[in-house]
Image (cartoon, rainbow, N blue to C red):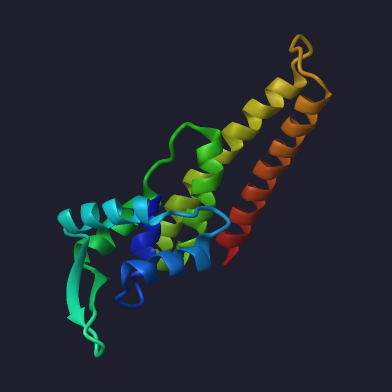
Length: 169
């Protein structure tokens, strides 16, 4: 997901690595908090793939700054990351879907629909799996597990409702 958020924050202007991290924290802190140790390799990888380019600029004070900008290939890659199918990991799904939904404004309506369908389908499947565990009378889950499962089911229901609301826009 780090590639996705980097590309998304570079949509509006060229930024230094520090500014990229600040924009990510400003916009995505509740979902992700990448360190410089994670950011730098991602920037190198994205530049090697042609998704971003860098420019070294000397400031008035004589300090060298590296500014990153998104390329046409980066725009295509961002689109592909947004409509890419999710992993089967339910925990990762919830986090990734929130990040992707936060970036929906970049997508064309037909691509947004693809992403919405993918999110709803996965949320429904994960909700059904959680409900099966909760409803299984032979399952030896305790009080705390039941409460956590019930809360998880509510999270999936809320996610589905949110996506359905976006679809009406």
